[in-house]
Image 1 (cartoon, helix red, strand yellow):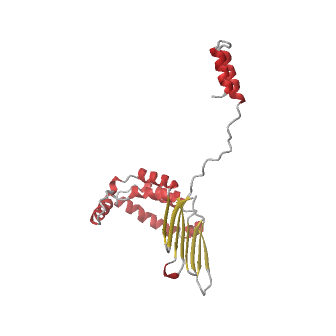
Image 2 (cartoon, helix red, strand yellow; image 1 turned 60 degrees about the horizontal axis):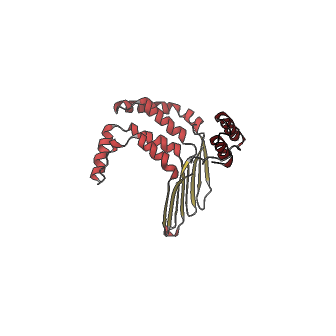
Image 3 (cartoon, chains in turn cyan, brown; image 1 turned 90 degrees about the horizontal axis):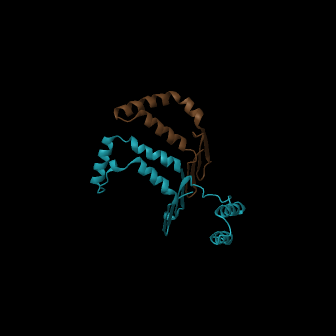
Length: 138
Length: 86
């Protein structure tokens, strides 16, 4: 609470001013207060998923730089809703056989979309002596 | 927005670089009879597998329109491939 507001409330409590006058004074204080800065830009939302791979194995430098629009990932996850149920059953059986007991029927498109939504804050970095991998959103 | 241009650049040692620009819309127009057949085949496949045709078309269109901005850049030694969709 600033000093002027404190003074107004003090005068009100001492009965020097009425409640209406205090209200008008506080309203006048609000008007005189400088407006908060509006030029603060919100953080731009990332648009792309970037995958960078730099490798030096076999003494031949290899560089992979892939940029995928996040919109494409969002559209891609909608494909999950188009997978026929019998294909999901077969995929589940194969996953179980490979030691991954995962039920694809439990995976809902909304969950996948939420996953893509939160990719914004993700950065993966793998640093090995001859290979560097970086995955991030920009 | 639908992709407008697909560009492919290939650089190889001891040979001239290859640059290809593919204007997507004219190519789609030229291939429209084939695309029509493909659409019919896809519709039949959707009906057989009990998938909503409209939903499949919508998803296909979303993927198509999300393609601009995709870029693939590969370099190994003196060989380089760049694919860009704009």
